[in-house]
Length: 222
Image (tube, rainbow, N blue to C red; front, side, top):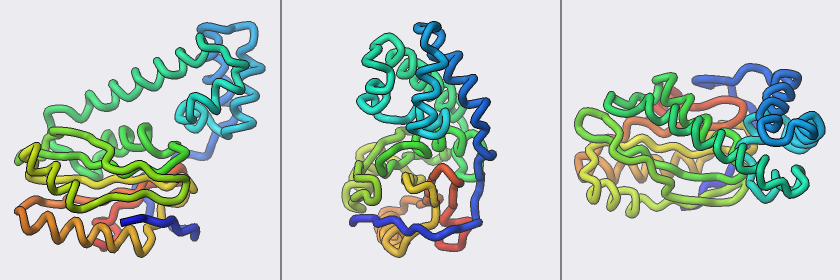
């Protein structure tokens, strides 16, 4: 199933981000770059902001796009990669050994850090046990800037492999608008139906984007 993005506005956001603070982003980028290249920290931070628009998008950008703006500096690029790995590990640690709820702010923070600024669409599944604790967090589909493929059969097969009893679906919209498309809703219905056949609970489907996060359950689609 291929999901194709809508572009209209929507206001049913669980967690809309604060307005972008350009000066704050610039300072944070300068501090990060300054760890390995203090002499060019201001120059590089201005380039990154001009190209990507925010700290989040600069950190989540593809390495090939970012390193070109850094004049090929491997040291600075390694700093970005290390920063993102550390941030991901800290946010992921807050999810371990406790129930996972789609309305939990720590869950939303983790997913936004992982996906909100990704330049391409990814479809991920959080696999949960009977206590709704995280068993695995896996990307089940990688797409383009406006579409991604996900297959209910593969998702349910993975549930059985992991002995998961519940799942939380998540995918991102690089356009920035989290509004679900008809294809998003149809795919969710198919996965929900297949999950019921195996007594697996579909807790929610979240769409994560720069401008907010939408819950299918909260919006009445589940």
